[in-house]
Image 1 (cartoon, rainbow, N blue to C red):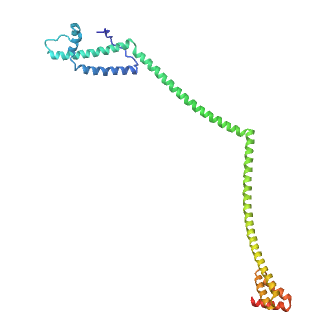
Image 2: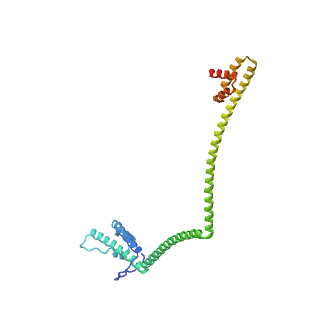
Image 3: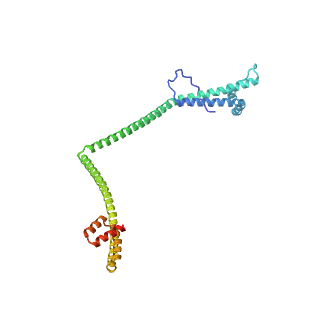
Length: 275
Protein backbone atom coordinates (compact mmCIF):
# COMPACT_ATOMS: atom_id res chain seq x y z
CA UNK A 1 0.00 0.00 0.00
CA UNK A 2 1.39 3.51 -0.82
CA UNK A 3 2.10 5.80 2.06
CA UNK A 4 -0.72 8.28 2.61
CA UNK A 5 0.31 11.47 4.37
CA UNK A 6 -1.64 12.48 7.42
CA UNK A 7 -4.67 14.64 6.84
CA UNK A 8 -3.87 18.27 7.38
CA UNK A 9 -6.03 20.33 9.62
CA UNK A 10 -8.62 22.36 7.71
CA UNK A 11 -7.70 25.97 7.18
CA UNK A 12 -9.70 28.40 9.26
CA UNK A 13 -9.22 31.36 6.89
CA UNK A 14 -11.05 31.07 3.58
CA UNK A 15 -9.24 32.11 0.43
CA UNK A 16 -10.63 35.30 -1.04
CA UNK A 17 -10.35 34.02 -4.57
CA UNK A 18 -10.40 30.63 -6.21
CA UNK A 19 -9.57 29.83 -9.82
CA UNK A 20 -12.24 28.61 -12.19
CA UNK A 21 -10.14 25.60 -13.12
CA UNK A 22 -9.81 24.64 -9.43
CA UNK A 23 -13.57 24.76 -9.08
CA UNK A 24 -13.97 22.60 -12.16
CA UNK A 25 -11.45 20.05 -10.81
CA UNK A 26 -13.34 19.87 -7.49
CA UNK A 27 -16.65 19.38 -9.28
CA UNK A 28 -15.14 16.62 -11.41
CA UNK A 29 -13.75 14.95 -8.28
CA UNK A 30 -17.13 15.16 -6.54
CA UNK A 31 -18.90 13.57 -9.51
CA UNK A 32 -16.28 10.83 -9.76
CA UNK A 33 -16.52 10.07 -6.00
CA UNK A 34 -20.29 9.93 -6.13
CA UNK A 35 -20.14 7.47 -9.02
CA UNK A 36 -17.48 5.46 -7.18
CA UNK A 37 -19.51 5.36 -3.94
CA UNK A 38 -22.57 4.19 -5.79
CA UNK A 39 -20.58 1.49 -7.55
CA UNK A 40 -18.85 0.48 -4.29
CA UNK A 41 -22.18 0.07 -2.51
CA UNK A 42 -22.91 -2.79 -4.89
CA UNK A 43 -19.63 -4.63 -4.12
CA UNK A 44 -18.75 -6.84 -1.16
CA UNK A 45 -15.94 -4.72 0.20
CA UNK A 46 -15.01 -7.07 3.04
CA UNK A 47 -14.33 -9.93 0.64
CA UNK A 48 -12.33 -7.63 -1.61
CA UNK A 49 -10.26 -6.29 1.28
CA UNK A 50 -9.65 -9.76 2.70
CA UNK A 51 -8.29 -10.84 -0.68
CA UNK A 52 -6.19 -7.71 -0.97
CA UNK A 53 -4.87 -7.63 2.62
CA UNK A 54 -3.56 -11.18 2.37
CA UNK A 55 -4.00 -11.94 6.07
CA UNK A 56 -3.13 -8.47 7.37
CA UNK A 57 -5.59 -8.38 10.25
CA UNK A 58 -4.59 -4.90 11.43
CA UNK A 59 -5.45 -3.30 8.09
CA UNK A 60 -8.64 -5.28 7.91
CA UNK A 61 -9.60 -4.23 11.47
CA UNK A 62 -8.91 -0.61 10.54
CA UNK A 63 -11.66 -0.79 7.99
CA UNK A 64 -13.92 -3.36 9.65
CA UNK A 65 -13.75 -3.16 13.47
CA UNK A 66 -14.98 -6.14 15.47
CA UNK A 67 -18.75 -6.40 15.75
CA UNK A 68 -20.56 -5.88 19.06
CA UNK A 69 -22.84 -8.57 20.44
CA UNK A 70 -25.89 -6.30 20.33
CA UNK A 71 -25.90 -5.85 16.51
CA UNK A 72 -26.50 -8.58 14.01
CA UNK A 73 -23.75 -9.66 11.66
CA UNK A 74 -25.62 -8.56 8.49
CA UNK A 75 -26.33 -5.09 9.79
CA UNK A 76 -22.77 -4.77 11.07
CA UNK A 77 -21.34 -5.72 7.68
CA UNK A 78 -23.49 -3.21 5.73
CA UNK A 79 -22.76 -0.44 8.18
CA UNK A 80 -19.06 -1.17 8.20
CA UNK A 81 -19.08 -1.23 4.36
CA UNK A 82 -20.83 2.12 4.19
CA UNK A 83 -18.46 3.61 6.74
CA UNK A 84 -15.48 2.22 4.85
CA UNK A 85 -16.71 3.76 1.56
CA UNK A 86 -17.33 7.12 3.19
CA UNK A 87 -13.95 6.92 4.92
CA UNK A 88 -12.26 6.26 1.59
CA UNK A 89 -14.13 9.19 0.03
CA UNK A 90 -13.08 11.51 2.82
CA UNK A 91 -9.49 10.34 2.54
CA UNK A 92 -9.51 10.94 -1.24
CA UNK A 93 -10.95 14.41 -0.76
CA UNK A 94 -8.48 15.19 2.01
CA UNK A 95 -5.57 13.87 -0.02
CA UNK A 96 -6.66 15.93 -3.04
CA UNK A 97 -6.93 19.04 -0.94
CA UNK A 98 -3.56 18.40 0.69
CA UNK A 99 -1.90 17.88 -2.70
CA UNK A 100 -3.39 21.07 -4.04
CA UNK A 101 -2.25 23.07 -1.01
CA UNK A 102 1.18 21.44 -0.96
CA UNK A 103 1.91 22.22 -4.59
CA UNK A 104 -0.01 25.52 -4.52
CA UNK A 105 -2.15 24.39 -7.43
CA UNK A 106 -4.79 27.05 -6.92
CA UNK A 107 -2.23 29.86 -7.04
CA UNK A 108 -0.66 28.39 -10.16
CA UNK A 109 -4.05 28.12 -11.82
CA UNK A 110 -4.86 31.69 -10.81
CA UNK A 111 -1.63 32.87 -12.33
CA UNK A 112 -2.31 30.86 -15.48
CA UNK A 113 -5.79 32.35 -15.76
CA UNK A 114 -4.38 35.84 -15.26
CA UNK A 115 -1.84 35.22 -18.02
CA UNK A 116 -4.54 33.89 -20.34
CA UNK A 117 -6.82 36.82 -19.53
CA UNK A 118 -4.05 39.33 -20.11
CA UNK A 119 -3.13 37.67 -23.39
CA UNK A 120 -6.76 37.79 -24.48
CA UNK A 121 -7.00 41.45 -23.46
CA UNK A 122 -3.83 42.22 -25.41
CA UNK A 123 -5.20 40.41 -28.43
CA UNK A 124 -8.47 42.31 -28.21
CA UNK A 125 -6.59 45.60 -27.83
CA UNK A 126 -4.44 44.77 -30.83
CA UNK A 127 -7.50 43.90 -32.89
CA UNK A 128 -9.22 47.09 -31.82
CA UNK A 129 -6.07 49.11 -32.50
CA UNK A 130 -5.73 47.50 -35.92
CA UNK A 131 -9.32 48.32 -36.76
CA UNK A 132 -8.82 51.91 -35.64
CA UNK A 133 -5.65 52.16 -37.72
CA UNK A 134 -7.45 50.76 -40.76
CA UNK A 135 -10.25 53.27 -40.35
CA UNK A 136 -7.74 56.09 -39.93
CA UNK A 137 -5.79 54.89 -42.96
CA UNK A 138 -8.94 54.83 -45.10
CA UNK A 139 -9.91 58.30 -43.92
CA UNK A 140 -6.38 59.58 -44.58
CA UNK A 141 -6.39 58.12 -48.10
CA UNK A 142 -9.76 59.72 -48.83
CA UNK A 143 -8.50 63.02 -47.49
CA UNK A 144 -5.33 62.82 -49.59
CA UNK A 145 -7.31 61.97 -52.71
CA UNK A 146 -9.60 64.92 -52.06
CA UNK A 147 -6.63 67.22 -51.54
CA UNK A 148 -4.97 65.94 -54.71
CA UNK A 149 -8.14 66.59 -56.68
CA UNK A 150 -8.36 70.09 -55.26
CA UNK A 151 -4.69 70.72 -56.01
CA UNK A 152 -5.13 69.49 -59.56
CA UNK A 153 -8.02 71.86 -60.05
CA UNK A 154 -6.34 74.91 -58.48
CA UNK A 155 -2.87 74.62 -60.06
CA UNK A 156 -2.10 76.75 -63.18
CA UNK A 157 -1.34 73.64 -65.21
CA UNK A 158 -4.71 72.21 -64.23
CA UNK A 159 -6.48 75.45 -65.13
CA UNK A 160 -4.75 75.57 -68.53
CA UNK A 161 -5.61 71.92 -69.14
CA UNK A 162 -9.23 72.51 -68.16
CA UNK A 163 -9.42 75.55 -70.46
CA UNK A 164 -8.00 73.55 -73.36
CA UNK A 165 -10.51 70.81 -72.77
CA UNK A 166 -13.32 73.35 -72.66
CA UNK A 167 -12.13 74.99 -75.91
CA UNK A 168 -11.87 71.60 -77.60
CA UNK A 169 -15.37 70.72 -76.45
CA UNK A 170 -16.76 74.01 -77.76
CA UNK A 171 -14.97 73.51 -81.09
CA UNK A 172 -16.34 70.00 -81.31
CA UNK A 173 -19.87 71.25 -80.64
CA UNK A 174 -19.48 73.97 -83.28
CA UNK A 175 -18.24 71.46 -85.85
CA UNK A 176 -21.18 69.19 -85.06
CA UNK A 177 -23.58 72.11 -85.65
CA UNK A 178 -21.86 72.95 -88.96
CA UNK A 179 -22.07 69.34 -90.07
CA UNK A 180 -25.78 69.28 -89.27
CA UNK A 181 -26.28 72.54 -91.24
CA UNK A 182 -24.36 71.18 -94.24
CA UNK A 183 -26.33 67.96 -94.17
CA UNK A 184 -29.58 69.95 -94.15
CA UNK A 185 -28.44 72.10 -97.09
CA UNK A 186 -27.23 69.03 -98.93
CA UNK A 187 -30.65 67.44 -98.55
CA UNK A 188 -32.31 70.63 -99.85
CA UNK A 189 -29.94 70.80 -102.83
CA UNK A 190 -30.55 67.16 -103.60
CA UNK A 191 -34.28 67.89 -103.66
CA UNK A 192 -33.77 70.84 -106.03
CA UNK A 193 -31.52 68.76 -108.30
CA UNK A 194 -34.08 65.98 -108.41
CA UNK A 195 -36.80 68.48 -109.32
CA UNK A 196 -34.62 70.02 -112.08
CA UNK A 197 -33.80 66.57 -113.35
CA UNK A 198 -37.47 65.66 -113.59
CA UNK A 199 -38.24 68.95 -115.36
CA UNK A 200 -35.33 68.47 -117.78
CA UNK A 201 -36.49 64.95 -118.53
CA UNK A 202 -40.00 66.20 -119.22
CA UNK A 203 -38.65 68.99 -121.49
CA UNK A 204 -36.47 66.49 -123.35
CA UNK A 205 -39.44 64.23 -123.91
CA UNK A 206 -41.48 67.21 -125.15
CA UNK A 207 -38.70 68.27 -127.51
CA UNK A 208 -38.48 64.72 -128.76
CA UNK A 209 -42.19 64.72 -129.53
CA UNK A 210 -41.82 68.10 -131.22
CA UNK A 211 -38.97 66.78 -133.34
CA UNK A 212 -41.14 63.86 -134.43
CA UNK A 213 -43.97 66.27 -135.33
CA UNK A 214 -41.59 68.48 -137.27
CA UNK A 215 -40.36 65.48 -139.15
CA UNK A 216 -43.96 64.68 -140.04
CA UNK A 217 -44.53 68.31 -141.16
CA UNK A 218 -41.47 68.13 -143.35
CA UNK A 219 -42.81 64.99 -144.91
CA UNK A 220 -46.22 66.62 -145.53
CA UNK A 221 -44.53 69.63 -147.04
CA UNK A 222 -42.90 67.38 -149.55
CA UNK A 223 -46.31 65.77 -150.24
CA UNK A 224 -47.86 69.23 -150.62
CA UNK A 225 -45.31 70.11 -153.22
CA UNK A 226 -46.04 67.00 -155.27
CA UNK A 227 -49.91 66.71 -154.77
CA UNK A 228 -52.88 68.88 -155.91
CA UNK A 229 -53.52 71.99 -153.80
CA UNK A 230 -56.75 70.78 -152.16
CA UNK A 231 -55.29 67.50 -150.95
CA UNK A 232 -52.11 69.18 -149.83
CA UNK A 233 -54.14 71.79 -147.92
CA UNK A 234 -56.10 69.14 -146.03
CA UNK A 235 -52.92 67.31 -145.07
CA UNK A 236 -51.35 70.57 -143.97
CA UNK A 237 -54.34 71.29 -141.74
CA UNK A 238 -53.91 67.96 -140.00
CA UNK A 239 -50.25 68.66 -139.41
CA UNK A 240 -50.94 72.14 -138.07
CA UNK A 241 -53.57 70.73 -135.75
CA UNK A 242 -50.99 68.38 -134.33
CA UNK A 243 -48.58 71.27 -133.89
CA UNK A 244 -51.14 73.25 -131.90
CA UNK A 245 -50.24 71.05 -128.97
CA UNK A 246 -46.90 72.85 -128.85
CA UNK A 247 -47.81 76.24 -130.44
CA UNK A 248 -50.34 78.75 -129.13
CA UNK A 249 -53.55 78.68 -131.23
CA UNK A 250 -54.05 82.46 -130.97
CA UNK A 251 -50.58 83.09 -132.41
CA UNK A 252 -51.45 80.91 -135.44
CA UNK A 253 -54.70 82.85 -135.98
CA UNK A 254 -52.84 86.18 -135.80
CA UNK A 255 -50.24 85.00 -138.29
CA UNK A 256 -52.99 83.91 -140.73
CA UNK A 257 -54.75 87.27 -140.52
CA UNK A 258 -51.50 89.11 -141.11
CA UNK A 259 -50.95 87.02 -144.22
CA UNK A 260 -54.05 88.59 -145.89
CA UNK A 261 -53.97 86.62 -149.08
CA UNK A 262 -56.68 84.32 -150.41
CA UNK A 263 -54.76 81.18 -149.58
CA UNK A 264 -54.18 82.21 -145.99
CA UNK A 265 -57.86 83.01 -145.39
CA UNK A 266 -58.93 79.79 -146.99
CA UNK A 267 -56.38 77.90 -144.86
CA UNK A 268 -57.67 79.52 -141.69
CA UNK A 269 -61.33 78.78 -142.53
CA UNK A 270 -60.50 75.15 -143.19
CA UNK A 271 -58.59 74.96 -139.90
CA UNK A 272 -61.46 76.46 -137.91
CA UNK A 273 -63.95 74.12 -139.60
CA UNK A 274 -61.72 71.16 -138.79
CA UNK A 275 -61.30 72.31 -135.21
